[in-house]
Structures are given as C-alpha cells and as structure tokens.
Image 1 (cartoon, rainbow, N blue to C red):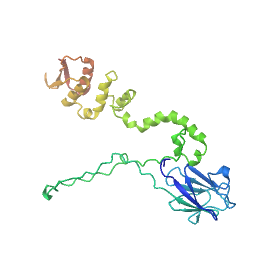
Image 2: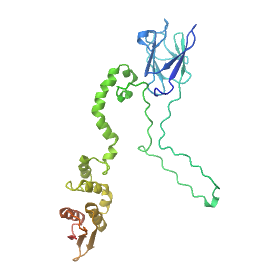
Image 3: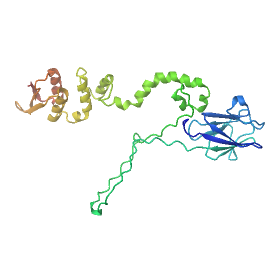
Image 4: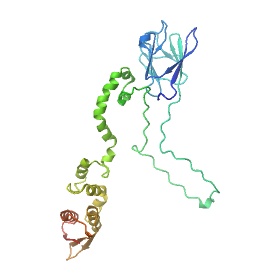
Length: 312
C-alpha cells in the first residue's frame, strides 16, 4: 500500500463525543492513553498508557494487545496479551469505553504484465466443417515458470532506509537507525544478490561474463581451448550439446571446424585405404590457425582412424 492510495481508517466512537476519523498512515500505529508514547491517543482511565498496536506494513492489517490492564476486544472477542490478529473490513475494536470501527480499502491489485487484449472477430462465422480442431491443453506451469506473488511494500517506509527492512518484524521500523544500519550490508551484498537473481545469464555462453567462460568450459569437459578467440569459445559452448551428440562422425567434425574457423570443410573417408580420412579446409583466402585445426581433427577422429589435413 503506497501513500497515493486510500488508507485504512478507524471511526472512533466515545460516550458523549462526536464520531471522529483516524487515518492509518504509518507502518505501526500505537494506541494508548499517554500522548508522548502513542499515535492515536484515547484519554481515559480504562485505557492503558500503551494499550494496543495496529501493524500496517502489509495486507491484511493486524492488531496486537500490548498486555493492557483491561484488555482489547475485536468483535466482542478478547485478544490474548501480545496476540496478533488480522483485521477485516467492518471489525469493531473495543478499547475501554471507545469503539473503533475499522474500514479497510481494497488491497492493491497485483501488477499485470503482458496482458493480451481480447481479439474481436468480425464477419460471418465459419461453417462447422471448416472449424479447426481444438488445441491440446497446455501443460501446467512448473515451479520456475509459476509467477510469484508480488511483495506488498511498506506503508510510509523512509527513503533513507534499507529495503531489507520489510523482511523484519514491524517493530524494527520504530527506530530509523535499523533502516540506515542495514544500508551498509545491502550495499556490500547487493552485487552477490544480483548474481544470484540473474544466475541464468551466467549459464548462457552468449551472456556469461568473460571471466566465467573458463568455468563453463571446465564443466563441459574442456571442449574449447582458452587461447582461442572469445567469440569462438562462446559459439562452441553454445552448440556443445549438438557437437557431443555428433562426435566421431563426419557431420560433427565439419560443424566443429565451421564454428572454429568459419570455413567449410570437405571430408573424404577411406582416402588412402580403410580407416583413413582426408580433411580439406577451404579457407578462401582467410587466415586459419593450423594448430587449432590439428587439435580439432585429432580430438574428433576415432583413435583407429588416420587423418591428413589440407588447408586450401
């Protein structure tokens, strides 16, 4: 609930007094007899100095009795000391001779992303014989695909406080020191938090940081050489699944050479007898690292096959 939205209200009825309205505009509303200790002051001897609290950090709002002398009732049901009970629209809170009618605005709707507009079809309907077959039902979303409910923000959270304050009990927002103190750790740990939140980018060879490429290569049995250009390493790691499936075949060797050199390769099997291979790389005038080509052919040819390399 933000400051721009309608706040929850308390309609206060006291004997011999006109009804008044109190708006709940802070995370914690303190209710009691002592003006210096409370936000909502109820001056009467039956009301304790610190009688109750209303927590408005998120929906629904909640009330807690602070071990008051005469207790707190919600809809004529007494609260256990220090019990926290959710409030619903229309609840009647009894504190001493005062009756507080709680009015809650509707909670903010979750943000709607990528909402599709309805498609309106105009014209004559298709004949029944031409209607397309129904689509199969979509599989249920997995745990990773299921959208997470948004975290409701705090009411009136200070601008100079850490956003981590919302994960602590509301009592820690009473003193501004905790919110400022957490800013130190938030600043130190935010890079690690961002890495964890976007770790899928580290596992994609096209978006992984340069320093993370050797880790991916080691996890994938060192399919690339660290001396090769970064673009070549990323492209190989991107197609590592297809290359491993076709390893030891003519197609796999041609694809491997194409990715690393950018040149088409011609492979002639049984060139000089059984178990011999001739690899012709058509460079078309481009410079090619012959040592790299040698390593690729040696790693992808079966051990019992002799090979010969020609760079044209």
